[in-house]
Length: 145
Length: 35
Image: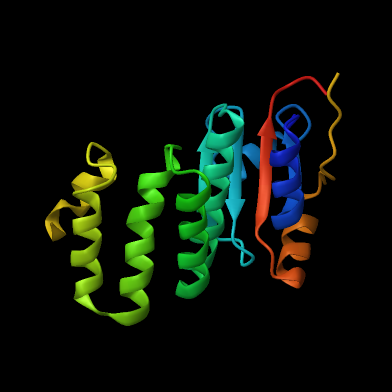
């Protein structure tokens, strides 16, 4: 159940939706390598996996993760402009969510992948020296600091 | 009691086909919760 109206509206707006119950469709659990419930699996329009969210999350955290998923769906098809837009949206709308530092990292990756300008990665490193400094994503960006 | 407003489909392959037609990503919700 997704009782939060913001969450259900976001899902309805952005995704084609399926619900699979373990007792009704056990073969689907094997097909998609499901390990735990709840699991939300986001696939790009070509069926490639964009994001796997295992376990319950509060509404703001889930919305941040779903925003990341939209970005990764765009990454899967190498649509760097859309990916950047989606990651920047997560940063702007959910700056305190766990998804935010990951969104910042991938914003830099999307910029670099579109331009092949190494300065984008250096700029990303500098941003992590100011924001989300204790995050796992700052460690990943530390090579560019 | 909260009501569900999302139009969930059970046929995964139909979901995938619709997503390909509409160029939209798919969200699959795997659950063990009582219906």
